Each structure stands twice: as structure tokens, then as C-alpha cells.
Amino acid sequence: MSKEFPDSKEKFPVRMEIEPGFEEYIPQSFKDDPIGYFDREGKNVKPGLTSFKPSGEIKEDPTAVKDFPEWKNPRGKALQIVAKRVNVKKSQVAKSGDPFYEFSVMKRVRSLGLPAPEPIGKVGIGTAHILLMEASTWIKNFGRYWRPAA
Image 1 (cartoon, rainbow, N blue to C red):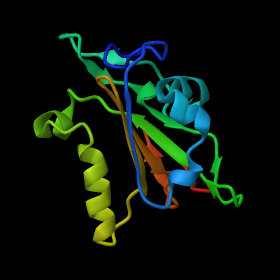
Image 2 (tube, rainbow, N blue to C red):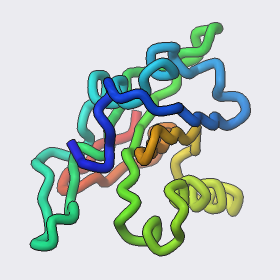
Image 3 (cartoon, rainbow, N blue to C red):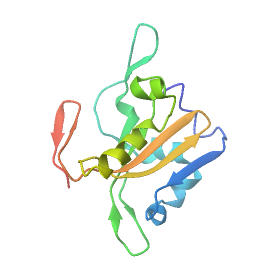
Image 4 (cartoon, one colour):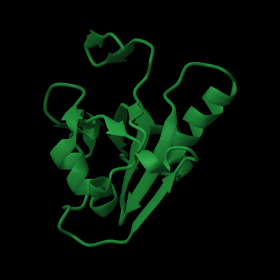
């Protein structure tokens, strides 16, 4: 687990923003403990181990993107969720200073009618951040393997 991601037993205020229309899908167990849920229920999308740069910074973290179990609303409609733990020291996130930069980009891309995951929500816990998105309905390429969309 990354140093930037607090242990689920540590108590920090949870800041959760869910997009309209998706609030009823969020299970209480996720609301109560987003980090613990991420660790317990999420299945790594990419195989492998976390690798580090010589400086000690994370180079690649296959544990950062996870498939969650199917979430259902009260009427039984299902939603397949992918969650991403944000590394605030990498790439455009670091340059922008916004831990939810990727969330904003997904919304912008979708507004242009281009394929991108549906942004579902964003969660901040202390210095940790999680993005929630609907699993893509188009073919996904993660790492070195292809998986057809459901």
C-alpha cells in the first residue's frame, strides 16, 4: 500500500461527491469506509507488483486501479464500477494541483461525445483520493492484456 493512502483504520473526515443519478447505487459499506472497501472488495485490474523510481517515488502501481463488485440501485439496476486511487505526485495531477484532475477530464471528454468512462464520484479521505467511474462499455486495454467489455 502506498504511503499516500492512509490505513482504513485511521479516522479522517470523508469528503464524497457523487454525480447526480448515481447516489442510490453507493453501498453503505463504501460510504462508511471507502479505503477499507477499496482494499477488501476491489480486484486489481492489472497484474504485478508496485515498482518504484530510484528516488523512492511510485513508478507503477497495479494496485491503484480496481474493479469493484457490481453495485445495484433499489430497483435492481446494476452498475459495474472501477475505482482508482489517485497518485497526486504523478503526471498532470501533480502539474494541476487538483487530485481530481482526471475526473474533470473524463467529464469534458464525455461532453464532447468521445468515449470515456462515465465519472461516478470522487472521494477524499485525509490526503488520499479515490475516483469512481463506470466500467467502459468499449474494449479496455489495461497493461498488457485485453479484456472485452461486458
